[in-house]
Image (cartoon, rainbow, N blue to C red; front, side, top):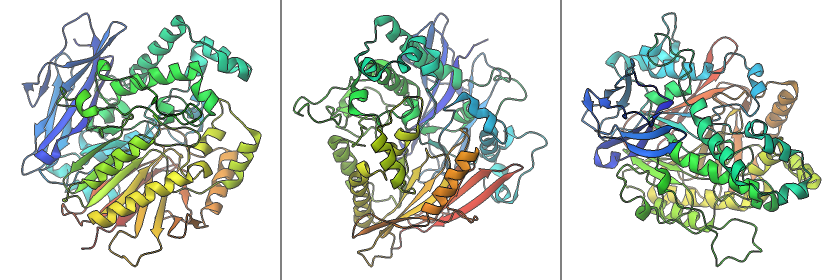
Length: 578
């Protein structure tokens, strides 16, 4: 029997513009035994790529790619030595993919599980029962919204979603401050000693081991109901094994607040070593790239040291990854991990908002150039661009709280209040970049004649926002950008007394429009089917075009957890009117 220490985790690698559906599967096994064979529709796939050997385990990437045909189809894969069969659904050539979006897949505080209405995996269970009819418990009852999709997918032997978009915080590394004793001691040091602290070789090894082992702890099918048993836990591991993922990191994938601390704290030796190992682990586990392919980040030598923002040398990703036919399509000549896809009439632009983040910067100049270059060359067949921003671009602006935090100078790794405010695009220190982003997206919508929607998470509520251009009479789709926020899939929403008071404050602030400049305004919209602007419920989001034409309408449907059932909140976004 084969013993899995992690996975399988499916990853979408692109290729749809050429009629290919490139998918890889990540697993971890013992490196003392022969690597298992994976079979796709009964046929053995090529030998795996070794991403990493560590601690007696081998982390392997298998190629499960297949051709797109005239009709969508479900394919099967198995791992020799494991009594389990998995499937994923491949869209037809040129078909718009059906997608699910989630974020915040964990707990910033382990005690948070006590705040949940249902179990930790209740939202994942709902998503999976919507996605794959075969995993539903015998007593499962579908509602009217689900019934709409039965004849189009499940009754044809298909699954509902082709892609699982994961917008940040796929894993929460916050317990590292408690689990590694020297770090727990560091937290209680005076700030001057924290900044001067040096990480020795022994501690560096503990940090490396922690980041790698934690993925296995969190991304393996629950040991109480492992693969091959009749009743498996419907959790994130199950979801990632059945839907090819598209992932981008946020702060908790490093540790809470990364990038939003003071320049002195960001540059301290301990923070830099934590980031080094978190970045390497993200590259291996979430991007499914070999450890030896990852270049080191180097500060640009032509930038004066007095600048606090990290300006790194750009990476020639096309050269670094040219030998890997399954490499993610990273935007060339940027230091971070931003990447993009064209899939039928849909474009996906996945922005890295953490590699270069600082108190006053979200993305560095080379990333902006790479992003704008890709947008300038976006496929003519693209009718709807989804821009994935881990942190909301439109959100109620907490000006008073920002002022209080700035005046207090509060900075502590075990309290997320200050860094959460600094994280927001709406923070005063990021408003300039927010305008640059919006101007870039509006220009793209107009010149390329397409609709743009922002997908976001992070804030532990569901919400809907819109940015308007007020200097144009254009009514074909280039005068507004909508944002759909879905958060969280596991993390508790705003449930405590103080959190509910905060939620009430958010709803009050959300009533007021934000004037960004003379040409731009933003507003939060009443959440579909509700009398509030933010929904303090755990949730996930479904995204489906009503046809495969480039001007099709996008249907967005939130599924929000309640005490008894899941409520449905449907929104239609018009296609670009030609």
